[in-house]
Length: 254
Ligand SMILES: Nc1ncnc2c1ncn2[C@@H]1O[C@H](COP(=O)(O)OP(=O)(O)OP(=O)(O)O)[C@@H](O)[C@H]1O
Image 1: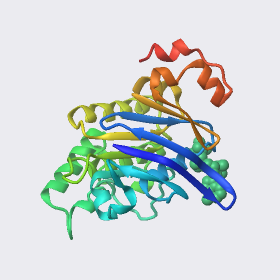
Image 2: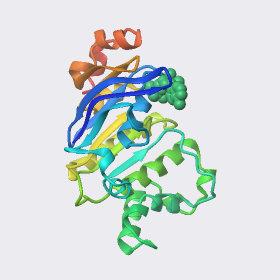
Image 3: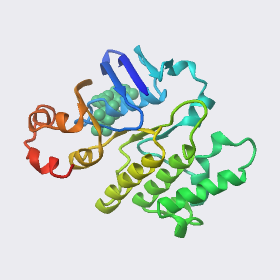
Image 4: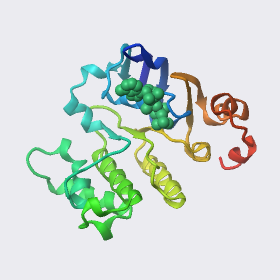
């Protein structure tokens, strides 16, 4: 669904992403792992179009991303970025409605309200729908952001298959919600088979449990990519993180 062809990204003489080629398949959960500073967030920003590659190209299906107008991109592609700061005292349901902005002209329609309602149900937010977003805990804010991005891509688009980009979406979440939210993604995808998820996470167990395909980054490059069980081996993990793990421990959870 999304293809990267020889993508590099440089700032001055520093290379943040070097010659990355990858194909993210439609309908799959693809997770990107790697040490701090390996280039994961930069790669997500290149896929979302927030950054333009210094060389190489990003394709959505067979169309170069740069040729798709932003207003169209927002109809089939949602992004949950790291460190999202809002400075206005919006209510929770208003933040979720932001996900619908690309879909209506001047004011939300009944369908937009219904979708926000369902998204809040899904992420267990109804009881805080009228709370000031700024007063929520870090984990609660993260769940609101999940509801916002899901509201954005709730319905299939006539333009393209849907895409959800997640940069460290599990930050601030306790272990219950880490698994719960990943499970919600998986469940949503069962009834929405055109949705592709690409996310950056740090937890090897979560990747082993949920990712169909795993992408290991090391020093600005893509070190390994493929079926999770073949990528998350003791050897590869040691090569990238310099930490010894018990392979079987993770694979038992698959
Ligand atoms: N605007 C910038 N100017 C210079 N260096 C940058 C810039 N943005 C990022 N970097 C550097 O590029 C490298 C890759 O950053 P990136 O945020 O992509 O890493 P990451 O793999 O997501 O790391 P983490 O796991 O810590 O979030 C880091 O060394 C970072 O300091």
